[in-house]
Image (cartoon, rainbow, N blue to C red; front, side):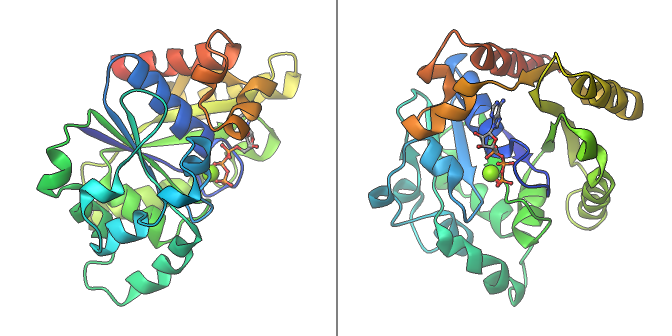
Length: 254
Ligand SMILES: Nc1ncnc2c1ncn2[C@@H]1O[C@H](COP(=O)(O)OP(=O)(O)OP(=O)(O)O)[C@@H](O)[C@H]1O
Ligand SMILES: [Mg+2]
């Protein structure tokens, strides 16, 4: 089992889109995948079609041990792709965790329960909120690696040093084995000189950490969540689907 935190404190860079579609691509290739929605916005849950009626138990209960794993894990319409959903309840988790002795380890402990490991997931993808709060720290403590979506635009690289500092401090204090899985450029417009420049800059600064695969900006990718589907099932042959499959392959080959 490999656990990957999809994180960037910058909002709207493609974390959720990447968690959903990378998850779908991995499951399409035969892997059993769990997406843990760790964002009170609940976008990953919505995008994977988990309607509110199926969100009476959520990631909040996972963190605080108040529900059985069997009740937490929801199926999606994609075969082999499962979700632990979130609601706005999760917005109080950050505060509720503060007084806890193992506050940074709640997610790690929860994901290591026998009831969950028995389900035999090949991948767990954690969709983080746009913040470096205790929720994101929990994700980094629980994860083997961090996957960082970077929007192909001018200020993309700003804020990355803050993220790297957080990763370093998680390594020092709680999870020495934490790796950076890689940086994935999202919403890439190849006709745009600036986007090309940002990709080149990222490669210069960060080298091989930057995936060769880039995710193009396409309408199909942005439409899919409103149909409660990954783009891979909404429009299987689209450029976005092809790109997320390539990302899954590159990730598995690393
Ligand atoms: N490749 C793409 N092409 C077109 N639109 C995209 C693409 N990737 C993401 N988007 C759109 O950009 C917006 C932000 O994406 P997303 O929700 O994945 O970002 P996020 O980092 O999870 O945001 P937040 O920080 O709020 O959680 C969404 O409306 C999404 O549909
Ligand atoms: Mg999101």
